[in-house]
Image (cartoon, rainbow, N blue to C red; front, side, top):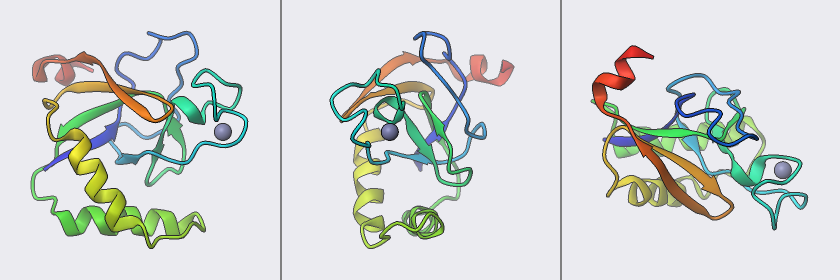
Length: 134
Ligand SMILES: [Zn+2]
């Protein structure tokens, strides 16, 4: 299935880009704190970031990748355990997994996306062979 993953591709496109995630790890769309609520370029950074499910760190760039053998249940489980590890309410894990699946459904593998508060937009689409070089 197609999944939203961390990437450092296109980092630097915006002056305030950052990537503290592990390349290729699953990311989700975390909550925005009060500081960044109205400004994707705010001082915290969470308004323009995706959150790594494993590293619990953040990146401003995510890539749509096809991960063979990954199921819907795996996805829910990954999100649930990440939320639990961080002390968040995990009861929305299923809902969140469904939302993320819908989000990436129409984007091609290799699409690099960025976050502007509640909007996720495509920054660039990479060809699969381009990705292999990085
Ligand atoms: Zn924040």
